[in-house]
Image (cartoon, rainbow, N blue to C red; front, side, top):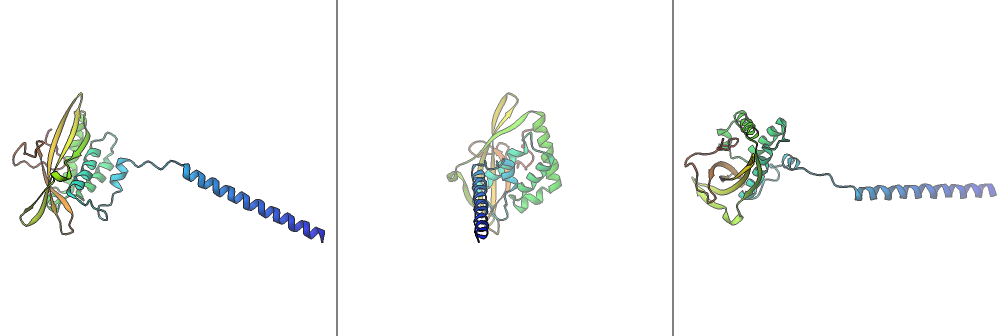
Length: 208
């Protein structure tokens, strides 16, 4: 009888030890998860992981802000050829059908890569970008379509020099209520065209 009791007690002790060890491991794992640093999301990851089909920018200004993120990455020294192609496809998701038709994918990629090479040749970098304030976005109607005009600026360094370039974007609301880029041109800070009638197509900064 005593042997049975000793066996039962021994079994209980083993069970308690197992449970205690399991609780210890669980707390340690939880503690490690809480103290672990979150994985760093790069600007490239942010853009390439953005789903414009399910979560399209809600305003013309936010469309250009996303577009500028793409443009800035185009000319980053660390951007690979594969990433340039992926970025270009992302940019085209922000375009109006008219702009897409005017710039076939292969043609656009050729012009874009040539422009990127020219930037590298002249040690030219888009250091930062900015978009006009919300109250400066102009809404209007053209040919029966809802349109918006947004001015963006680009701070460009070239060697030891620097300059600030402005572009005015025209966006048209599509059937889903999303504003898509239909055209853009170089302008001054007030939005006045620098070369009247010249539309600057993506992939060509117009200042080569």
